[in-house]
Image (cartoon, rainbow over all chains, first blue to last red; front, side):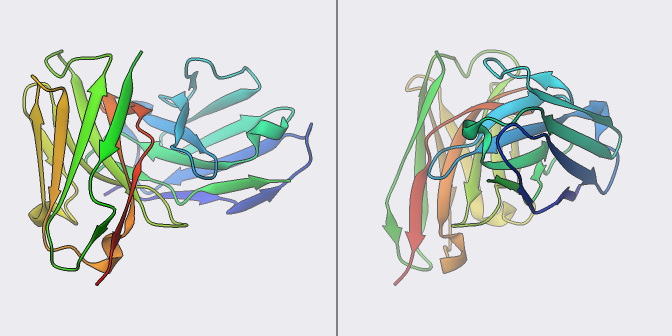
Length: 107
Length: 118
């Protein structure tokens, strides 16, 4: 099983600031099949980034991501009020598929 | 437009069997490389992947729950069913189903909260 460790657990920022979220895998994520989901209270997770750096449909370009192997990053440049949420990284390279524990981006 | 909706009991007693149904539209489970996954989230906790069934009836399960889970599909009804046996209070969670392309779950249902309690 690939364990995903996200840091930090909580990120306290103001609107307009930059958020940098990290996800570290216990083993290499094959084909960089690492994605990021955004989840707001009471709602289902929403795909933000897939395959390490591709923005999902409808995701604004203030969201960017990168990384490879075992280290991945999600960056939100110029936080908007609607960006405050919990973000999960997710590897879909090997079964069992796994998720990180989440990073909460709060005001 | 891809949509999925989970349904099932809101409350089950410990040791009972839980049956959840995912009803979907906007895609077919006869299309190559398409699948439906189940993922759950205990209150206030992280996401946990449970199971996945593909268009060709290939099935994958979480090894931590493998003996308790069964996933099936009915392509005529556009439904996927997840059965979990011998439930326990730790199985209390919101259960999501998701359209999966390749291995990526890109469209999720709204989720259904299941409480396991006597």
